[in-house]
Image (tube, rainbow, N blue to C red; front, side, top):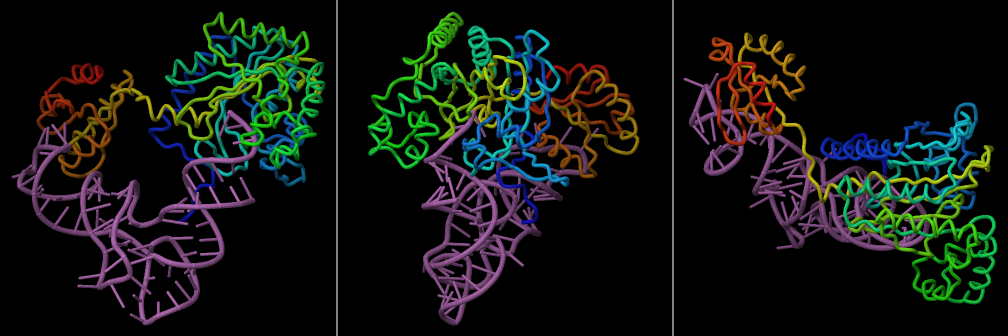
Amino acid sequence: MSITAIRGFNDILPGDSDIWRRVEEEAYRIFSGYGFSEIKTPVAEKTELFLRSIGETTDIVEKEMYTFQDRHGDSLTLRPEGTAPVVRAYIEHKLYTAPVSKLYYTGPMFRYERPQKGRYRQFYQIGAEVMGDESPRADAEALSMLMSFFANIGVAGVELQINSLGDANCRPAYKEKLKAYLAGVKGSLCENCLRRMDTNPLRALDCKASGCIEATKDAPSIVDSLCEGCASHFGTVRKYLKLSGIDARINPRMVRGLDYYTKTTFEITSTGLGSQNAVAAGGRYDGLVKELGGPETPCFGFAIGMERVALILKETSAISKKPLTVFIALGEKAEEASVAILKAWREKGLKVMEDFSPGSLKSRMKRADRAGARYTVIMGDDELAKGEVSVKDMRTSAQEMLSFEAAAQRISLG
RNA sequence: GUGGGCGUAGCUCAACGGUUAGAGCGCUGGACUGUGACUCCGGAGGCUGGGGGUUCGAAACCCCUCGUCCACCCCA
């Protein structure tokens, strides 16, 4: 083996790339229908941005970031997620002077994790952020948009789970309450949960260790501990989800891995993905913009895992493509004549590929078939003499000599 | 970071520690001198991931290493 790609960094080859393109195009189409515009941010940022936004004690920051020094000694990091860079750009370019900014982005993210099905070191996300809107209706609308997106691209069997993590008013009190509860069942908690009992007790609710599941069975629920504002926000989100015809399962144990979330959080899962079953997730982050030096700006956002969506679609859906025509010119005269013909056909939007190989017609027909041709157009001495071409339908084997015009007409039908 | 499975032809996989490592698909040539996909016949293609060891003899057994997949952790 010579040089290979970096571990966890994948090539997206033709075939797969068609699925990717369709997913991205559908996202653009649907999101823009809700008033979103694209934002493109760099793949690297100053490390500090992620330390301050994601949280210093999160797994991402502690062990998963691609951090390096540039030649001037600045600490840079390949973005592990998309929200922080968007917020940085939002503040830097004073986008908050607009009443609300609806932004979406796509691109690669980087996390140094052990690769696994649906999890890679470079992975693509499609994300969207509603910035400057505190209304719970914004949460519900974004979720509704997301569900439409999945329905449109043909991802079935998705489940939406939502939760509210409260805000600066009620979360600290809940944290204390939970801590006190956990202290009482200390003996049955796993090592991990014990370690982060003080810093991040919520994680225990999410733990899959059987001991922790058992021990936290009767733990106080965050949903019951929300302050008035958060409770009413959560209620309205649920009401509007219902009005949008969306089923959401309330999961008070769902905790997110990033520190900046407040109030609504959610996760969309799909079966058939193995252990990494989330296809999209996100939530509200009302404090982050201010935290990073901007004005108080309530926001809601989410990210979709491209590879995971592609994995699902690969199993379930076939994508239709424009029919391909392969053009075979026999002899130098025909080769010369093909230039003008193909140029004209392509200007009509036809998808035509000329076979330049020197082999026998037989081998060239075989190549056309292998290339997936719906039609093969042959131009040799006979056709040349008449100023026509032979069009062969590769599915029915029917073949006909036609004028250039008629041939173009035929192959455009598919 | 931890645990397990797997690395043999372009792909999917065979081969008890014992001749020259095989098959299907694909590729290529021919039967059919201008016709693919079906059929038949031929051909090319391998440092068995890499390194070390055990053995008369290793693709196989042992150790190391790299890669890959799945899972844990965590997440999109």
